[in-house]
Image (cartoon, rainbow, N blue to C red):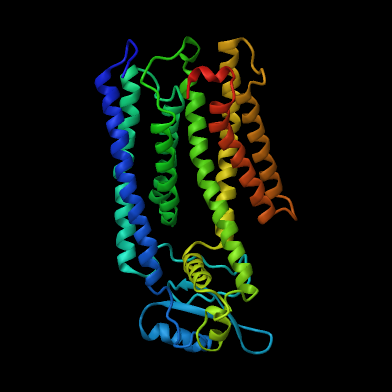
Length: 395
């Protein structure tokens, strides 16, 4: 490994070892979250009657008899029968009644662990491992900076390491704030591992000093805010994907798409489905009944994007000020500048659409996905495939 002058090789090597150690612990945490979801599917979130088609009163009585404080709601259909078991919820001080409508009637699921003690233990272990991995990750990022006595985000490798840390930090901060977001653990650890995997294999560069144009206090201001925005945008992206997943599930439930999963009279219809499709359907029902309601996910995505959008605006303004100091012009339509602006416009369109009647829900969610795609291309695509003034930072 060739190191530039002014580089501490011991600290640079320590940084690499800490990053690889963090990846190993993140991997174990990811498997722990997988176990949480798997065991949670086996733990009964609700107490059902033998045929899963009894009256609402019978179902609630069965739950109270076992002391679980759980309730299953059955909705009456137009012909007087039962149409669907719409939602499962944990009761707090009393029974929570859930109807088939979306919006105000929705109730959040209990989380990935459901009511299983084994799943809850796996989830707690996963969070503890994620905290340990984050500490190792922080040490790796700090050691990288100390090895060259500068801020540790001067190239794509360093930016990716810091970006992955920002994703983890956003997740842990939400947990520390007592938010019920442990269901985010699996997608966060998967994304962190993918980001660090790409960073260490494709984007890695040796620890080295920066070109003169990057020796500025704006490096700390402009790039750090971009990293924070990236981590928050990713959290909102996951919430948006799961919102679409949940909303599609509820629409299918209301259309009776999962009636064949019920025992008894529904078995004849179930024979028309392949075992593979039936298995997938059962998995989706299990997962969706443990996730937050679609409306909750939609609100979470909107609030994160609305909170971070002003900071992304500041990031662009700070970059323009730095460009004037380094290159003599505030704006030259460099590819990075252009795609940063396109990303800003995309998120502005989403926020406007989200507040406009007729564009809420799925339409606005698609705009949020498009906006994140713009951010992702600006992050990877522009730096790897397009040559511009930002190319001197290296990949």
